[in-house]
Amino acid sequence: MRINVSQQLKSSIGSVRNYEVSEAVSIAGGDSMVEGKVVLVRTDQGILAEATLHTEVEVTCSRCLSLFNYPLTLNIEEEYFPVRDVVSGISLSLPGESGCFTIDERHVLDLTEAICQYVLLAVPMKPLCREDCAGLCPTCGHNLNRGPCDCLPQEADPHRSELGKLALASDILVAEQKGVE
Ligand SMILES: [Zn+2]
Ligand SMILES: [Zn+2]
Image (cartoon, rainbow, N blue to C red; front, side):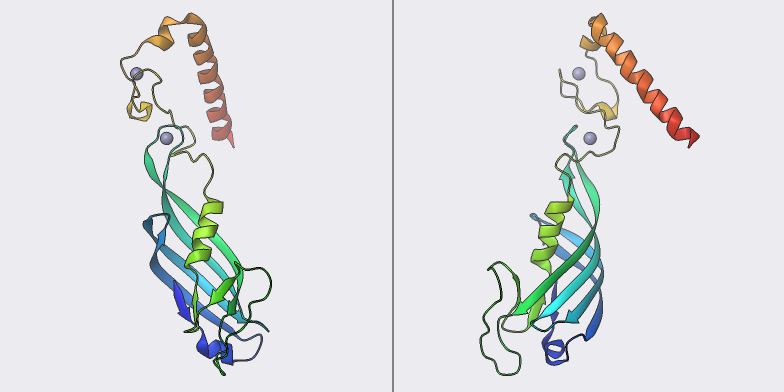
């Protein structure tokens, strides 16, 4: 997601540009559509990018291992520093630690790397395709979201079946409570 900021780099501190963006960005090996608003503000040393972006990334359910699209809203706020002065063409030293975001020699500010970093932070460690994902049968590996399998171990063990009923009862209770709200 590249924006040419050569004109804005020549403008005064505090000047603001607004962009509506909608494009495919390569995130974690797959292309995801990224849409939203980007506000660029000229700072004394560079450009502050404030973006609210919506996207979906494909993740694997930690319980049933199926792939599903996980919707994300990213609130990005990062300052970008030019590596070259837009007027004189002189190379500039970057402030602070290396690894800060830069505006390249052609005065292009590329949000792709920030988007990828924010996506990594926003995706949960153990995503679930849905809150009540039934997971896989521990015996045959069948995806229990698609209905029961032919395995019997849960029924064969009376203790486990009692636990199962308890879990079921509490699920129903939760469902009822949700219904009341
Ligand atoms: Zn699942
Ligand atoms: Zn099974």
